Length: 326
View 1: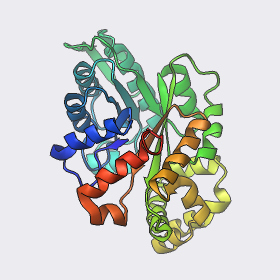
View 2: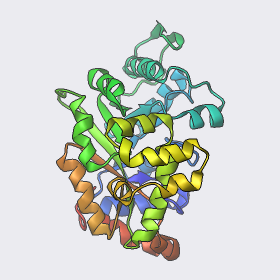
View 3: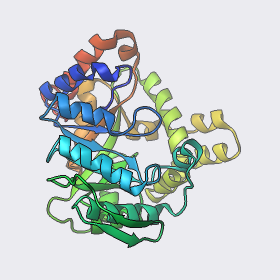
């Protein structure tokens, strides 16, 4: 499950983590956009629910210096030994440049360089290296983790997917349909033992299809017009289905862009229906090669109206004890 849950304060997440554990969820994964940072919700989970595995999906490689990113990862790995996976990725120009005042230059090289730095630093090595995108002089973690966390790489297209296969411990997929998974995994080639494939799966657990599709269109228009995601979906073969959206967006017609997203694209990328139906569709990702399906819950009319009671009723229906997806 992606945490934190919308509308629930961090202080109230002890009950959320306990409910996820009872429902059979094995992992909680955080994201980092403009809400909480990636590490605080996981630190709370480490203290409150020691059976859950923890992961970041993702911590951007631009917004922290390499040493600080290594320290954050090492601290969480120390708090949850053997239970933490560090997911990193390039993020986007909006988050990096517009919101964090950092240049978004050469994202592939920066991601590769941070990955190489982290692999060495988290092993406790002294890093004294000139990389293509930055230089580190004699950095050594004072508290290297006894169990270095696996490092997973967020990847969309062939270049980053191949980098993940060659140098990371796993890959994190995002914004793709279950039927798209084989296309992405084909670029990985033969996977090494222990290599993990995680995928964030957007879930809107409501039977109000009109609501779910309207929300889905807004999200798709906001995300898949970002150049990297647009290129990803062209590569996946959605030029014809999403071309009108991209044309309207380029012309400055935001409303027209949203209206141009076909229902079938929304339904493929945003799972909606009863919680049990959503869980069943999430299992299709596993059938197609995903090891860690990470549900990302979207707001619904039921959750908005029902508050904590609605959340308490929803989680078991999505979990192994109800829908068998965790």
